[in-house]
Image 1 (cartoon, rainbow, N blue to C red):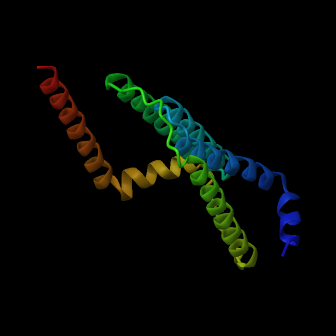
Image 2: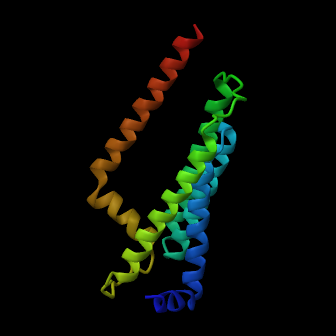
Image 3: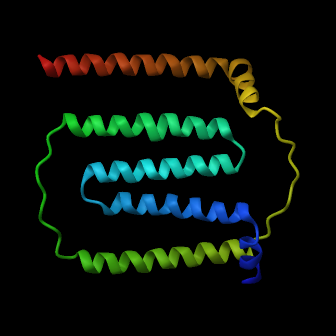
Length: 175
């Protein structure tokens, strides 16, 4: 069972995958553990950037670029603007059940890790050779503007309506 682990770490790309996976999981855990909202946003942005690294490792450069632009950039900035525009009270009191919560959280994480580890080690993954596109950005563009042009246009209309609605709501609160 453990021979698969040595085989896994013998490849450099698998090692890089493991590091990015740890960064993603670490950012997610920090996000739910932090108490200050700005620190949570930074942890989420760290997870988004690590996920973009995984996309580069999978040779999906366009998806990685979009991940950085939209999630790590725009969504994180949007969250920070939302935090700056709202009022927050100081919450200095920590809950008294926090040590027990942390112990139970650690036991749950280790149990989940053990179950997932066992499932992956005993699973039989068939190896398939899939022909990859030479220029995946060109292929994505061709698919969007030929096969999926109607959903693409509907999504742009939906985003425009949401943007106009946000402006109307902001104007009402200002008055």
